[in-house]
Length: 494
Ligand code: NAP
Image (tube, rainbow, N blue to C red; front, side, top):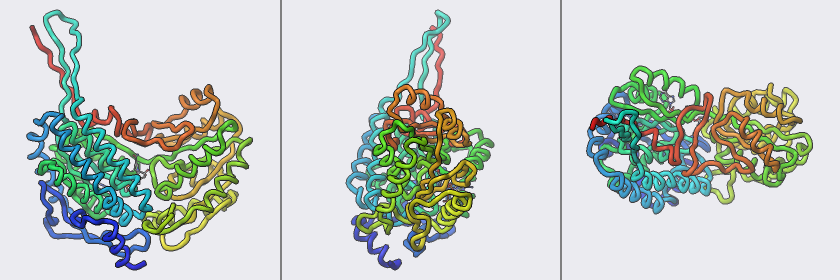
């Protein structure tokens, strides 16, 4: 398929061409970068150029912070109810343009179109949820230890916020941050990933149409090189009071160090290395289905993707056979082709990492039960490896690809120790029909989220986030808005 055909696909599926934007969105306007620099957005399937987008510099980042700072007062002065009405209009427009947004996600991220539509529904749910939560930001009245005082607690918007987001969920990772920020009364500057700026810009266009006031939500796009200077401004400008980042643990550490210089509040949604544990007493069909949907979502490029499969000896052979058989039936292909379950990896480096993990495992004695090699371009076959051990690379770093590496275990104690043996603690999965074991193992596992007999764990109602070096803070849920609020205590003498 040529560059023209992916562009044609985009035009076919994205009917509202006004959503295909390529400049920075600052102070409610589409603007070129101050030095007019641009960068190319590529089709991950074959690297052909899809669009050319404004490449922000440090100066553009400062201009965006100026805009957010200027808009903050009026936006935060609105009632939560009034902000919620604007956000609800944004949500309605997102739902009306779900197909258009999915087309952008598929074109620049390679995600199969049906799956991209799922991401839009998921991402939109945060806008709807926080549009409702906007009017529920309440305070408290505490009983004073002194009779001549009253103690009030109010919660106020934290101020100007910055969000830095990854390419793997280019829509939902933005709404999960922008929606609570706006609901709380904050203004925000977003820097999306180099690979996926178009989805972010379309979201900004819909926010503009919904009547989100100029400067309340700004988007600065940048390539990987300039992301560093833009990120430095966002994490060091004293007018920014909160930084929310989703991405790798390595970059999270850099941003935390930078934020320390002006003591910003930080929310860090970082890397995962999820264990997927299947006990002998599990419902085999449910465990196999959970493994497939959990692992092959976005071709394995998800932070909560199971990355280490531990299966108890009594069910091990049957689990390996069933997962391998189902994997070979999955169709690998381009995002807009019919029936595609697995799209391309984001780039050639991602493909090389997957291949390295598979080669390392087979060299150390793992056996291939399905797949094992690239198909074409940046596509990799759904792959199942049996006999994986904790010494192998795939058990020590995120693979971020469509590879199921399975280890055998015998006892509960042994599997808990192996699962917890990781610097990460984002998500984990556990399949058992023994209710006592569910509690015992569930409480012993060191992860922020656990799927028990289910791998579909993320939604707007549940608190999303990790422990250990998977980060800090929670997104979504009734707790998610707290990131964007600060508490003030009023001591009233009477
Ligand atoms: P990444 O390399 O950390 O990049 C994420 C974002 O940070 C991108 O916007 C990137 O911009 C930017 N960035 C990179 N270096 C920067 C710097 N020095 N200063 C400022 N910004 C910088 O991660 P990724 O490869 O895109 O995403 C995959 C990782 O994200 C995985 O580890 C995955 O587990 C994690 N993730 C976590 C969650 C979660 O909720 N916990 C969700 C999704 C993904 P450029 O693209 O321009 O370089």
